[in-house]
Image 1 (cartoon, rainbow, N blue to C red):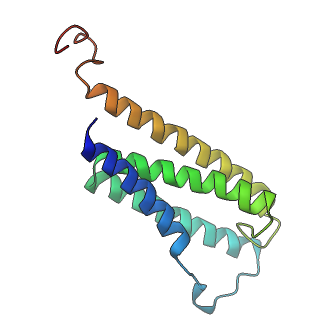
Image 2 (image 1 turned 30 degrees about the vertical axis):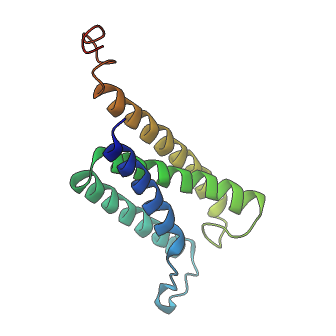
Length: 140
């Protein structure tokens, strides 16, 4: 196993998980009253997430990027299901749009989680000379 790859994967996972839960945002005193204002806030967060994904894809190792995808997917799916739905601690918004927005985000998070794990597994097996096609009997 490649230590750099494992370190990158774990670092990406931890960075995203800790980053998402360590920010105290007060929205600069802005009160969001309408559905469109709340959806705009969620949309701006989604755009920021896409920007971070692009930055991490370009400037970091594939394992770091895959760890970030897994962390984001876990955050979106696990956090919403456990803390929003089971324990009712908070919702993604304070309006009725949370009823349809949260299931979409859980689905999106699950897709990111599965995609990140599959891509990391593929990266590991494609760089392993024993499991590469045509190299089954070489380097053994």
